[in-house]
Image 1 (cartoon, rainbow, N blue to C red):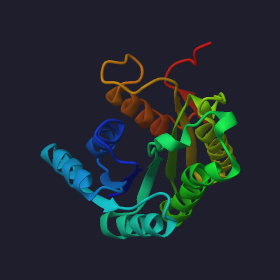
Image 2 (cartoon, rainbow, N blue to C red):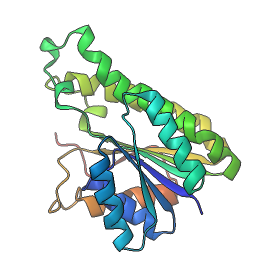
Image 3 (cartoon, rainbow, N blue to C red):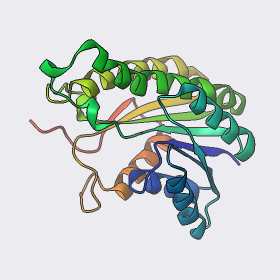
Image 4 (cartoon, rainbow, N blue to C red):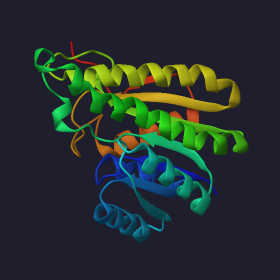
Amino acid sequence: MTTFALIGAGPGLGLATARRFGTAGHTVALIARNTEKLDSLTAELARGGIKARGFAADVLDIESLAAALYTAGTSLGPVEILQYSPVPRADFMQPVLDTGADDLDAPLAFSVKGPVTAVKAVLPGMRDLGRGTVLFVNGSSAARPNPNVAGTSVAFAAESAYARMLHDALAPQNIHVAQLIVPGAIRPDAEHSSPDVLAQRLYAIHTERDGFRHYSEPLPD
């Protein structure tokens, strides 16, 4: 049995994707900072018959992130699918003219050092399996810079570049890397961007392995 590892576990999209991949037969590793939240999510998944375990880590602390993924892989089974979708902090989203050089340190660590650390941690296991999927979930500023949220615009652009390079470099090894852009808010009543709809979309990206960048809905003009 292989593992679906979710970085940025939460009660919305995180829980929905964990449930979707868990229902497909994968064990689930939930990674987030808050242990109480992790306990609640694992209990919710267990009620649905899904084997899940929480691992506390902060994406800004690369040692804790690498350790969590290593422990997940050794205790639950090798990570076949990695989803990187933590929610950026509010202080990353300042107007461009109010953003100084130091203000970019945390967003870039969040969106570049975190993904690099995570991928490096799971890649040996994927290579041993002979297959794997890495899923990045980003807001619209990853595809269209927004001067009102400069930190995430800069950091998501860097994350997108890294993910695209991974897509090209790892495809010959049967490891599919893809990005899902969600332009609007994730809401239960959203036609294209509800947690359940997005979870199904991410599962389809994993199984169909078609292309790098996907959109939950078109970007508004």
